Length: 117
Image (cartoon, rainbow, N blue to C red; front, top):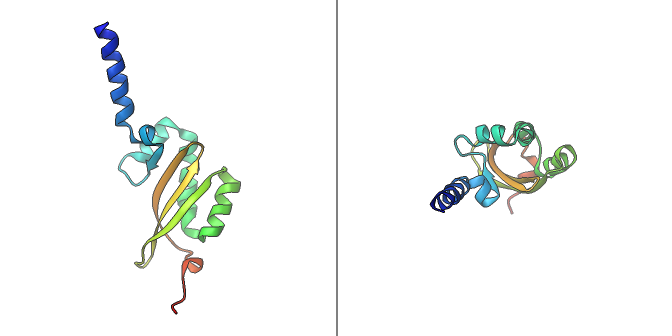
């Protein structure tokens, strides 16, 4: 019985130590997140690599359409994070049952600009 308890406890500790499993959200900006994803879910890793590479070239509306048709991914949000030059955005999207978040540097921000006044 103690062996069974130890096995269950160690399994629970492993599950709770993995933020991707525990929360259903993966922060791709965390060190090692992409490497873990490549190991655990290579299909998502390939799709996410393409999304992150292409995201800076799209306006948010076109990015959402492209992600939906290319990867069956739902874009949750894009939030302008830094108005530096070049601007950065926080991209949040859902692929399968997992939500992913990443910071991307934007190239095509024309649709995100709001005129003053």
